[in-house]
Image 1: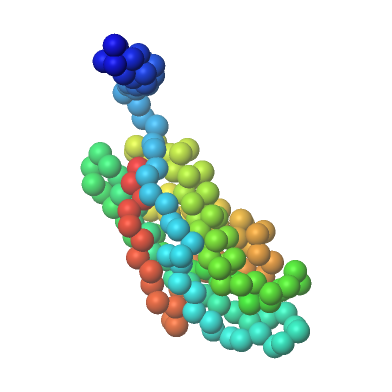
Image 2 (image 1 turned 90 degrees about the vertical axis):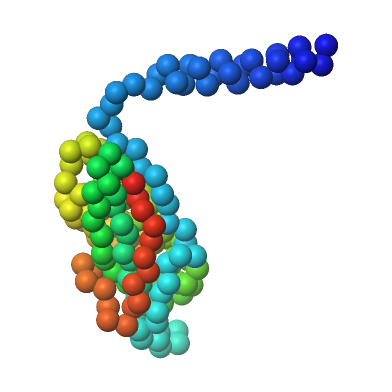
Length: 164
């Protein structure tokens, strides 16, 4: 009896797995694996804010390896993220800046890579991600920037692979 009950519990799972496997076939779509966590982004304070006023600046240097799963081709995508310490909306904590930067980077990679094909040049995908970030990061934090070159005081943080 117990064996039959156990088999009945697993039957729906097995049916769902069989259905999913049946749906997978040859494809030229790309799937992105890998995510950046907020705690992985390390900001360095470049300039303190004047108390009660807008200003100050922090910077992080991001290096993300983009890898094509079917050929192992890879490229290192490099860019900076700079945010104010205090803007028109008030003070911006390091934790908030980290969360917003990580969220925007993850969203930009998902949006750009999901539209790519397995033949898309990795260097062009990197540039597309940076172009998206130049719009989305300042829209999320007034006064933020995404420079193509990292600030010299920001130590590069190397992230694992974003594989597509």
